[in-house]
Image (tube, rainbow, N blue to C red; front, side, top):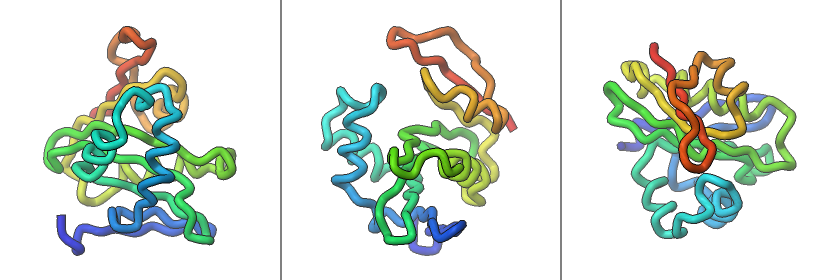
Length: 149
């Protein structure tokens, strides 16, 4: 990825940006470390996975890391949506919907036809965007969801 591949979207003073240099490492690792899906992953492995993905940082008008999401992708045919969260203080304002919409409409992912994810608590958020459950629960109660476009 080059600087030409950095994208920015703005709404109501908030910004979503794909510039990895803007990511607040400590904030992201702290938040993900408290999630059911990443709590058992070392900080080093988590950060390596982030650096090797298309990242979407959500920033408040004050510049605070307000949320995050990433796509693990070949930028051609497949992507795995992961680590989507909004800080509790910024929830309930539509930021979760916005970051998912942004990730799905990213021009760099326009040719990706299959996007998958795994969740045990946000089915309705993803179903609104066309994702469908494609498998039963895994050993941790998560369901795999897929969007074909």
